[in-house]
Length: 296
Image (cartoon, rainbow, N blue to C red; front, side, top):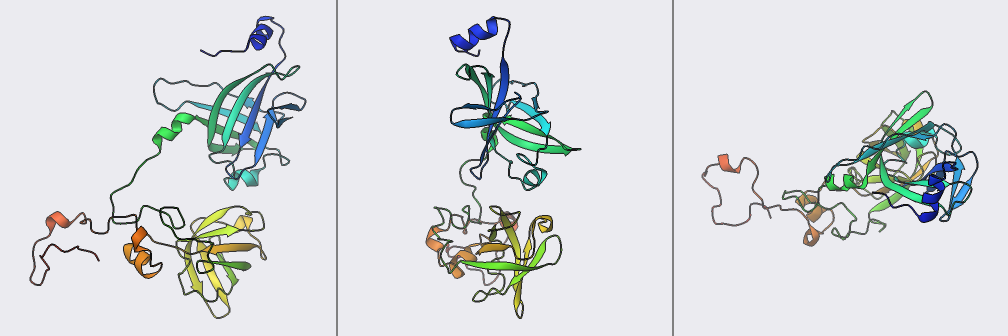
């Protein structure tokens, strides 16, 4: 049961209310936005909540137990606040949304309704609909290690120990041409062999994708240029002259950790674990059956 402050409870009980809903959105890139269905700007908790005409919130379906509650917010896409490019680029995916019920004549009379996280966003004819998922969504995230031959850590994580900001694992390039939806040609990446950045990431420093990172699937050096391919289409938000940082890639194999990074001591997988076909194997002449590791 919600416990309202005495002041807000008395205001609601009066029968003549001045209530508005406010939403504070905190994106994963650190940007914070505030919106309200009131027709004037409201301020509280150090945040500014601007009028968003056409914004409306749907019903909240509360579930028992650890199930994820869901709701939604619907509004008109406003280029000055939430624009279509930001939605398509995923800048709002996973953003934290705090909802408030506020007396717009006295914002000290307010109630924090709920905290959600943005899930799926759909757009139809200039109108966006954002699915809001309750904090129980974290219960669906897998925790702990997976017993597998591949490394469980991402390159650059604390468990990995590699500093990807080291010049040995990083370089900067400029876009020269746009080849197709997934591929660009950049200035020559000198000092790094072919595929050094495959399975790595690209961090965009300028252009529409500034602040975004993309997974690199292919890195190939040619005579005076380099070709970079990505796992998702990027061409609609990239222009010639855009700058980006490239970070070394790791396919999480034991051999890569050993040969490319000399980082076996921090390998987070289980390279000696038998494969799925181990039970079907049988001894052959020449096999080593002395109990030594299968993989060194």
